[in-house]
Image (cartoon, rainbow, N blue to C red; front, top):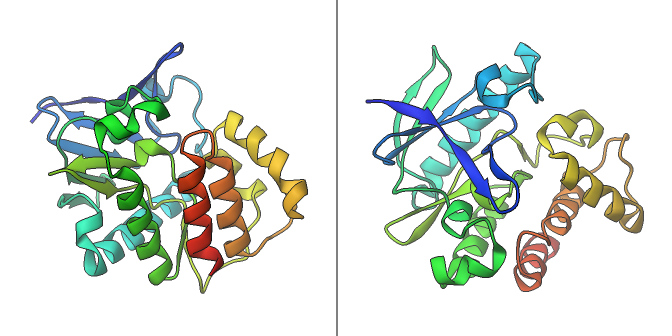
Length: 230
């Protein structure tokens, strides 16, 4: 089977990397998505954030650990795992076409036309994370695919269990796009957080939700926050 690099087509910008950490691949029939934990210079075009092999190894480990944990307890919320190549650090996932964000033309106002109940489905996934004691900070709408009308979550490389932490934002800045860092910095002072010092995972989860208000509706963000606040 042949695979191509996978990009998001953002209005006014054009083709952009689907992920900052790993290299995204998609089969030519759009039925398999590959998370390749390899620093591919051609794909990242000189904007390679994760260049340290040890850090990439950690990201690979986290994706394996928490994606398979979801597969054990909530398999309905992730794409079916078609294969895992431990040697090449590739995870093959069964999908149906482009990711949720791409399907919506990378525009929040189109979400409802793509999947009318996306908000409830996404909140169910957030609730599953909370039930498992997970704090998932990679919440970009390109982190979801739609299979048989159901949202499927990926990108657990930026995920921590409640037994871990605290962590600092500064130590994870390579995972966070520059514009989102700007948004987060605006929120940090108001929330009494620090960019450089370790912070509790639950407070960082709330910061994460706040930083994604530009990608989701306020009602979704408010509801997601409530799940982790209760």
